[in-house]
Length: 416
Image (cartoon, rainbow, N blue to C red; front, side, top):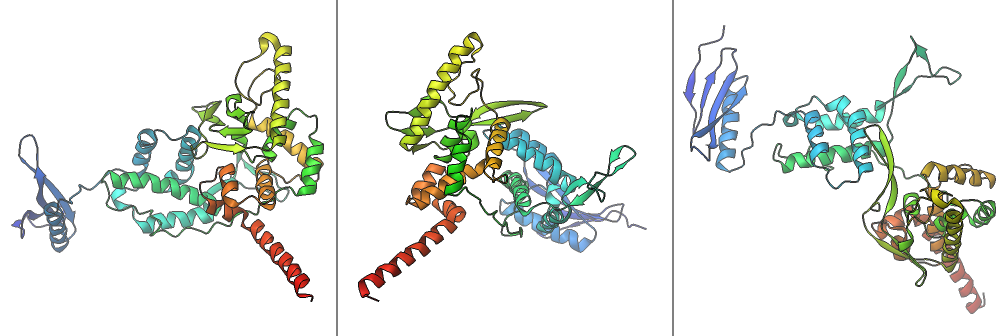
């Protein structure tokens, strides 16, 4: 039977009492109301008197050091809703959608009900470990590969998420919790990299087109509707969105340069989708000095677009975009991608991706003698280190070739 309420003075400040349910409550003054000057009283709770005394001492010390924070009762799910609605101002719409999808599909199903003050590194680490083993649901299939149905509904089973996806989910969770710390709801971010161990990502091997395949590809796309678009990508390294978002005011024929300051991106929100021009991936403008061949292709594109406009007449949809269809409308990524896949398959590279044109440019530029800093700038990478990380194998091959040439030189001058 619980003892009667017992109130005792605590050392320093506050009081401790046993409640009717046998738990212990420690009360203390956390500060004073700025308007009335009255004391603001708070409580901490514990199962034993000793634990209550310890919590009281910690709270009083925090108040004395101006470091007291009232425990946050908000759940992670509630905070994630606030974070996505309030703290993503200025983030690109496509990125916001990716964040929300990661939250909906991966974070909330496991952690939505956890209170922020109870979310620790151990819980976060177990969450990431779970994602690596059974983080997504996929249709269960029979021996013939067909999805199994029961009662008219598809049967699902658990499958692992890739290390890259887990790292992306970690980035979303870490960013959301970073704002929690800034708001002083919790003292430390339990998803900090120093605390959590994330899987190592194995970078996918890039598969650029070699010289023979580039020549075959150029022949395969000759006189096709997207020839100019493919060639500009192949010899400038533009991303697909940057190519589709290129406008004539960013093409300087006099200096032979292209200004890359935006991209075309599909924006999906509330069941609606539309292509929009938004800033580049890193929101930085870059200028590319293009090969004369590229500028000639753009002049050709200008003439073709003028012909299309005359033929379309009143149906022409005026814009400043470089790459449009026969009625002046912007091109879509699926349309461009399907045309690329047909051309790639015709030269024996059905595995090639549109992004491999960008890789092909980078490898060709490095092998042609461009320094890494120049290649980095043309590609729009944040650092030269990242460029080296992606294309380091090319520079290693060049070093080996250089050593072989030096060996031949040494033999020629030494007479050996």
